[in-house]
Structure formats: C-alpha cells, structure tokens
Length: 517
Ligand code: HEM
Picture 1 (tube, helix red, strand yellow):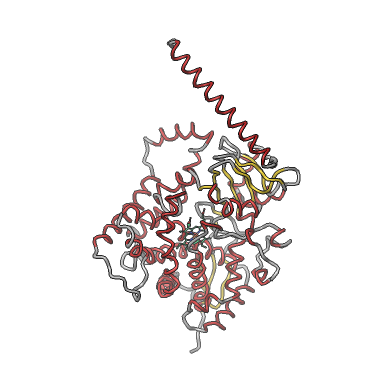
Picture 2 (cartoon, helix red, strand yellow):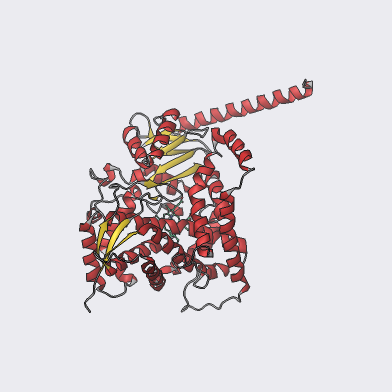
C-alpha cells in the first residue's frame, strides 16, 4: 500500500521534530556537564555484565559478585543489562548521601518499583513517590511513635506460639533439631498482623491448620514476593518484546501470580470491611495499640487502609524474620557469641520477662544485631531514579573524585551489602563477622552503614524491628542452654527476593535449659 504525500510529509515532520528534540537534549546535557565539571565514571561492558550475572545468580553468589566488581572496577561505575539506558552503580557514601538526603527531592523510587509493588500492595508508603508518599508518611508516621515498644506482651504471645511449633526433642541427646527460618517468618507475620489489624483479626500462621486464612495468606504473600522480580524482568528495556510474546502465551494459562495477589487482597478486604462495620472505638490510652484503628481516625477508605496495611506488612515482616534467621545462622557457628549473649541475658534478666528499657541497653545484643545487619542486610541493594538532570558528587575521572552526570530518568543503584563490606570504612577485616567492632570508638561509618536506609525515607520500623529481634534473641537464650549447627553448608548463601534471606535458613539443634528455681 502506497502512503499518500500528506502522510509522508507528516512522518517526515515527526522524524525531524524528534531528531531536533534529541539534539536539543544532547546539547543541554553537554552544557550541564561542562557547567558542573562532570567527568564520566568507568564503564563496564553490558555483555560481560549480563554473562557474569547469570553465572552468579546460578551459584547464589550474586551479591559477592558485586563486592568483587566494586573492588576491581571502582566504587562508582556505569553499566547496563537489559535496560536501554546505562545505570549508575555506586557504593560511595558521599553519593548515597546525595541520593537519599541532600538531593532527596531530585530522586524517586520510580516506575519500576511501582510496577513491582502495586499488584501486591497497591499504592502506599513503601511504593509511592512525591505528594502521595508524603501523604502516606504523614498518615503512618505518628503511629510508629506510639506503636510497639509499649507492648512486649504481644511479642511474648508469639514467642510462646513459636515454642509450641517446635518439634519434639530427641530422647537421647535432648536436642531439638529445627530450621528456625520458617518459624521466624510465621512469627513475624503473626505479630506484625496483630499490631496492624488487632488481636481479633491477627493471623495465627504458627498455630492454624493448612487451608486456614492465615496459611493461605502467608503462602500467597510469600509466593508473590518470590516471583515479583522475575515477573518484572520481562517488562524492561530490550526484554519488552519477549515480555509481549510471553504475555500472549501466559494469557492462555492460569496466572498463578495474579491468583496469589487475589488471595492476598480478598483475605484483607474481608478483614478491613469487617473492621469498618464495627462501631468506632473511643480513644482509650490503656488499650493495646492497633495500627488500623489509629489510621481509621484519618481515613475510612477501605482501599487506602488495605494498601497501607499491606505496604507496612511488606516493609516489616520479611525484613525482621531475615534479620533473626541470619543472626541465628551465625550463632549456630559461633559458640563464643552464643555464650556471650547468654551471659548478658542472665545478668540482665535471669529468668524474668524482658522489659523494653533493659533490652535497649544490652550492649552485646546490640552489637550482634548491628553486625548481622552489616554483613547480611535484609535489603542489600536499592535503586532510585533521577527526576531531573543532576550531579552526584564523586565517581568521575581517572581518580574517581570528580562529580558525575545523572541524566533525568536515569537509574542509580546502590548496593548496601557491598557498602557494608568496604575495608576503608570497616577496616581490613570488613568481611569478618566481629560484633566487637561496634565497641571501637573510632568506627563512625555514617553513610557507610545504612541497613535501614537513611534520609527522608529512613525505615519507620527500625526501633520496632530491633526491639522485636532483641526480645526473641533474649527469650531463646532464656529457654535454651545450647545451640549447635545442623547445616552442612559452611557459608551463608543468599536467597534474593524482595528481601534477601539465608538460602539455607538457620538449621540448628537447641537444648532446653533447666532452671533450678
Ligand atoms: C530488620 C528489619 C528491617 C530492615 C532491615 C528494614 C529496612 C528498611 C529499608 C532499607 C527501607 C527503605 C526502603 C526504600 O526506601 O527503598 C525501609 C523502609 C520502611 N520500613 Fe523498614 N526495615 C525493617 C523493619 C521494618 C519494620 C518492622 C517495619 C514496620 C513495622 C518497617 C517499616 C518500614 C516502612 C513503613 C518503610 C517505608 C518508609 C518510607 O518510604 O517513608 N520496617 N525499611
């Protein structure tokens, strides 16, 4: 079919216009680079990047691959995989500070994060940007100050459920052999849901039978988090045509991801509607804190309430369970640390139930958790997208000291896992698990240590998570005398999902303590 002259003129006009726009952007960018004295960061080949990543993912050493790269290429470099535009990768604390704090308003989570999260959580604090994020944060933040801390009895209830779920001890040795990881994940789901939804609607995944709402929710929630990344890889850059073909093929099949999302949403929808049908409660400071009740003072919109609950659940549940799992993975291999925490627990509480103030001041516990979060941060990498042309302070030129140019829409990734292993911040033994390092007055990592992120979007649940993890740690010390490793794998291996956890869980043997009094 021949095109009419008018159509040809139109096509030519659009082509010239777009070429002109490109030229104008290129000239603007060049002027920006010159005005700010920017230099290019080192580049790493796309092809090599892809090949190395495939290999590292297969051997579950993807994070260590990045450590190696930053050590051999530079602390800041540019590369790409399937994205059309190159991505900037950095572990320079100065750059991270600029992204998260100094130039916070010039970066956002971006479309990619939204596409990743929305099907599961809907819009909310963990997935929104700009005004919507500010609204979410203002809605949620006051709750965190009131939340938790006051109420350790909720933690105790869920810790008791964890004890109930343990298998029986071996009759001869007296040891209980168990992988603690699934128990921690159930415990954090149950206790987070109790804080978010209240005791009557909370999940009881540790106790409930298969097929119950708790377990269906948990299985669906775990499934979507596992699949979320893989699903989105086909929605990026050069992968889009494959994504389209895959999408057409998938349309003929059952979509398990969508089904799991539906399960998550329908279970919560019912709970929120049930909650909204109840009469509004009068504010009573003596009652247990419930997130949903507090939020409902500002909004009665069921969708908004559900989305924020899901966002906070997503942010807080797996992260805390991963911290506990990683910590016990280490404790099972380090009897010296186990003995130290045991002594501190005995000196602080004996057999008494832990209280918040004493827990907060346990130095050995604090050091242990800090070190666990340093070497095995549950959120080991993160990304932001520039909302306008901007510079990052370092990484350009042969010495890496010049500012670098970040184009509007360009993605910057930072690897917290690698940052936390930087010898110039943590010394030559940066890759050794040594909680004592936190006693060293000379150690001031600043933006070199950000397990909870930093700046305006710093984690709201930090105190909640640390209190919960300390509580569980101390209670396990009180209940059990000994721990032994029951895992043939000597090294920690990653399992990357939205949150990164130990691939092998925390397979241990625990022996109950006999209290004399
Ligand atoms: C060891 C446990 C935890 C770790 C390592 C952790 C880590 C993080 C990190 C890295 C972020 C920043 C994400 C980003 O901006 O890209 C974040 C945000 C957040 N976290 Fe946590 N978190 C933990 C526990 C919790 C808990 C228990 C809660 C709630 C009960 C929680 C609630 C939140 C919320 C609401 C945000 C979003 C803040 C915002 O964007 O304004 N977190 N967390």
